[in-house]
Length: 199
Image (cartoon, rainbow, N blue to C red; front, side, top):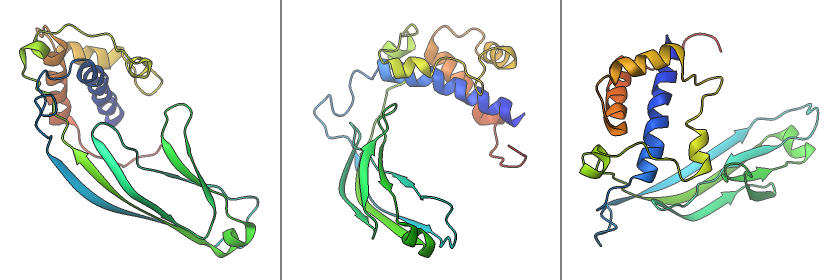
């Protein structure tokens, strides 16, 4: 049942992500000339790799790095480590990372990496009650990466029990935003966080 609820919650994500990405509110704080509310956070990320007296081969460590976008600024990024490292980006998703390759001696002794940065987050608010969203038809994603999140895969079926539940809880809904709201309400009312079990 937990897998079933997880899959249903993913259906909600697949409906909301492209809808919000394509149909933004016509009057966000930024568009009206007002500064969006923002908050600043100081992060320290500490990684400790314990000593490995008998490393069988080279050790590799990748640490995700924060990224700036329209709603987040990152400044003061500092990586403190005795090991050399390189920064790069994942070719498929573009996520930033720092890659470390310690020497055999460093792996045998254990090592630490400390990452510090400041992130400023700006509010991203979509007026879900706006007439434009309430009356919108399902948009076609503009980004190929968004389209792939609408497709089924082995962990996210879009047929069978998931489809039956979606139809049941969206009966009578005319727009994608109404359907998304009812699926969200159902998931919120029935899901629970449970890490028990295998796999």
